[in-house]
Image (cartoon, rainbow, N blue to C red):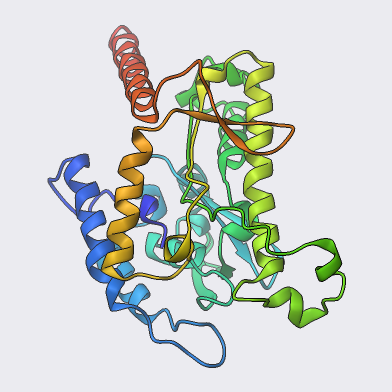
Length: 323
């Protein structure tokens, strides 16, 4: 479940501060997660019924263009074999993309083999039905950093007043906070000699893991981090990009679907400890994360980001009042 998107709802949880809202979602995650989803011997591992029920109850009739903040959510249309991207800006311009946020969240969470794909329909401005047959957004962008950057550039090219006077390729004016969901410690389970003997079943499942899915997933996320790091280094604005990721999870903490209270609370503790760790940057040669000795802790960098954004907001308010 994409908890981040659920925290952008405008009306489902009224009269609560952002801090209280995040606590609400966190409590929901820990309290509802242990209920689990029914296992299935054939088809997806989980039916998704409980997940769908919780998401629909929380988000209600909220649509994409009603979120508190502008969002962008990737999904993949399994029927058309192409990405389908939902965003606040697109939903405002194209009514057929202004879907229920619950449908979009369910779709982007529909990880192959774990949860079923999701079908829903919308209407365009002429009343014509548009059908969506969607699965996990991670198929499109397991790390959506560059997706967000290009989406902003697109809005600038279209003359969106929210970004005046920034130029479409002026990435030095961007501030990127990329939050990873954690990844498993590299165990070096397999080598070329072993995988060269695999057929279809071997690539799909081997010793408790799914090599082909894991390979695509990790490659997608890591490559984006490397590309973003190189881009901001080349522009000499490293401080504009902050990637926070724990890449040494082990055991159940590295799993996709162990939702016991013990494991969820353990992940919360990992997240709190991560705040105190030195900011890391990816070594573009090895692909490994290494401490960035020129920067402070993740917590200190988040505080710096918040102060800069607050200062920018105040400056924009003053400029707006002078119009």
